[in-house]
Image (cartoon, rainbow, N blue to C red):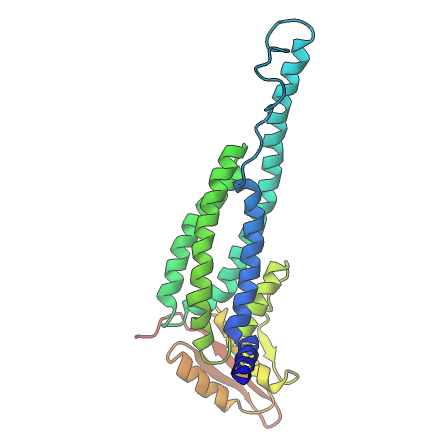
Length: 275
């Protein structure tokens, strides 16, 4: 029993879906914590400041006027703070959505097995964008809270679909694309940029990392896009994997055929293959 448990723990630590899920989960939990600042009840401005006790309540004397001015000030300050805070939260949410779309979603959008899933995620993304815009435009605590609750509800659906459906679908694609895609996702979250160079030289790359790197680069190609692979041998096994994973949905043209250096231009055609 102890031996089986140890094997299970070891396998989950190296499972790409488990590791990718941990990254996605951490980011969603961070966004949830940011949104909680709006969802939690906020104190009402002026509450408990002598309301109803008759002091400074419209008597018209000199002592009453400052009280009324002071009561109005916190409400204005609250609206100002809310606007400043929403700007930061909205920026973080949009960064996450862009990172997901340009890595995980982009890779799955071109695979027949997950194309419809990405279409559904994009429909939900449209609704989410509207709620995020509303949060960005919120001018008071009440409207910010309402918008934040809607954003959080849709984000919860996104998290469930990405963790439970999208990540396993990506892991099932040939070429081991999930780990490099998650690495790209984290790069964008940190404010970095992805390598979109027209040439990928895999000669200095460890052999076990070459195919995933090439497939991840292909996954980010838009229709009509290409890149050139540079290798020290004819990558026939990689070609076979492309044919199995993307039949009729890629181009493979030799630019240079050895003997010491091989160059292949790999692309995504403008048309979709018949399925």
